[in-house]
Length: 155
Image 1 (cartoon, rainbow, N blue to C red):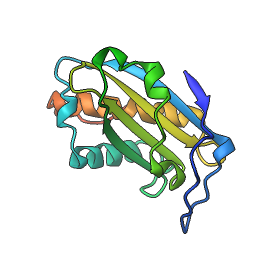
Image 2 (cartoon, rainbow, N blue to C red):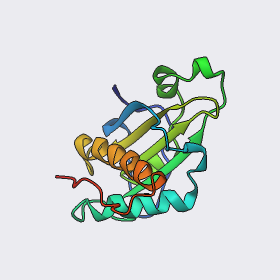
Image 3 (tube, rainbow, N blue to C red):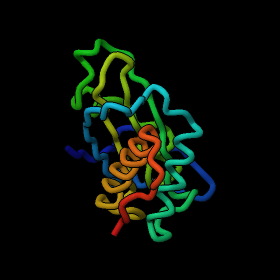
Image 4 (cartoon, rainbow, N blue to C red):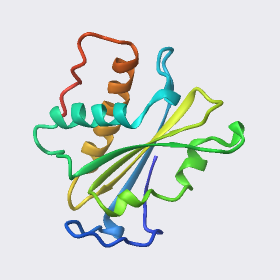
């Protein structure tokens, strides 16, 4: 499911100008694999995921072009749905970098959602969706303690 996101105030940054009317929000939902412990996803793990995703992006995604976030959602577990996630405000980072990927979790659910916000003047929607999927792939590989941690190439 995708919607254009246009209802947050723009935040001024030195090096990046957001394009509110050209920002695409892509939301997708998943059921966590058996070993995927989403509550344990730390800032350090997100930093590793970001590095792995950037490494397989053929130089398109650099450190200053995207951010990975995790947000815990507090609501009745029955209300934790794709529709409810789409209605939440965008993180401030949307106005600071061309691509923001946000993992949305609920403490009582094995389902999780991933939202990406991409400035279509800088990063296309296909790259945003692939970045979502690569992030989920990294987390699965990480928590399964696989020796081969390479991700699927982004082509």
